[in-house]
Image (tube, rainbow, N blue to C red; front, side, top):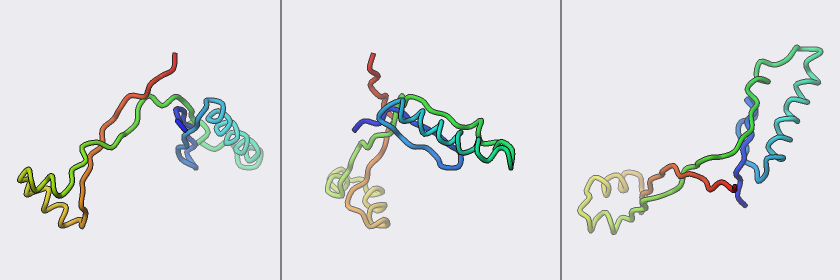
Length: 102
């Protein structure tokens, strides 16, 4: 399932959602909870940081290199890093744009 929307609530962090409605509901629910506490404690400063929106890009795994490839390429530094970390492959990440429905 594609999660092209996000919601952010300072006390709870970021969640990703399939629809704008889900993201908005999470934000509205957080505001409703703060509203219940406001008469006794006042409004939380974090209420102004509640946000939702469309995900425009995200990180994606790329450049997977196995130990065999690193050894064949003569990449001694990468082989040494794999040895230190006890892994058989290394990956990198890049940012990619999300497809936006018109």
